[in-house]
Length: 154
Image 1: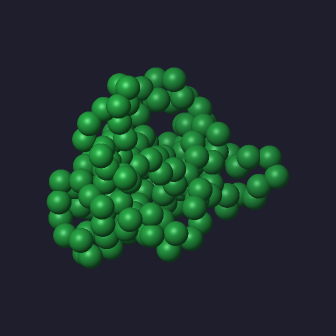
Image 2 (image 1 turned 135 degrees about the vertical axis):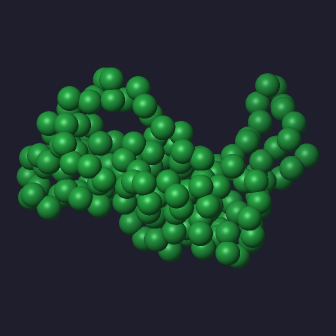
């Protein structure tokens, strides 16, 4: 029986199969961490408002990712904004330099605003994007009018 981390066997139909981190919020709630400001900032925020990180210190994120990589635990990481995606990419790059490239199956959950350059880096690092593509059906007008606008290439 494992004492920490990923379990290979089930106990009462349950096993731990990875680690979940959240690096930002949601674009519809204007809490996703972006590299460019929201089109319409939330009340009380100025025009430079671009959301915020859930874990503001890169060192803390790096330490969490480091622990997962050192133990070969799969990571499932909530990143809606492209700034949060940048933070994850930096952390995975650093951890991979320390522990090598293995099939850890790091997944970026939502990946709603990733840029083309980030997709290239994610491919190199083995980060799997789990796009929340149906989100555009439900929130597309809101994102156009309130959060992201018509801009291309965040």
